[in-house]
Image 1: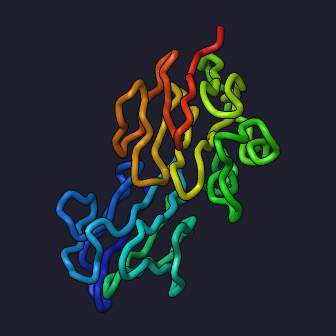
Image 2: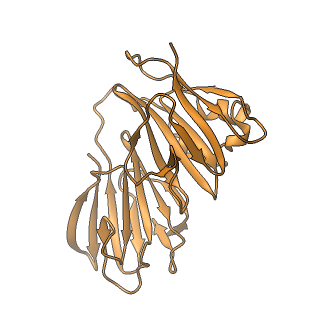
Length: 227
């Protein structure tokens, strides 16, 4: 399990395992990682962990977030990276991988340097590039999403890959992860959480059910299982 080592002035303060898919960092008490210092914004940053990989997102903080001395908005975290928030530092220690093993999806799917795909262009060249790695074999039924609104209403996207990224960069982004026990929707970017059947999700992964209606970045889509 990946973890963060929180320190200040070289003194280790806390070891924080990344137990949740999305862990918020900030001054306010409701954050998963609270740092009670005026240099830290109320909601400063978040670490999102999908499978065995994590990335950091600055939540438009006042004083910014640094990784290895460089200001970042989004950053794919590598083992040993040092996150800086004011006088505080957090060292990221990744999950160790045994020799010969590898993650079951390409990190470039979510953490590519270019823009994430817009839901209005699902099925186009960008979506194809994002979904570049087959999912591991499982007994899961096949599934897809169908756009219900927008210029591409009626278009279907097959969920045959381990990770499918949906949304509009800078507005709202989420991912659907295909796992051995179901399809899970997780919020990644944006001030508002996706809606499922009219109800807003929280930071936790949500297991999708047949015919759930997802609303993301102003577009409605239906998740359904295929017989």
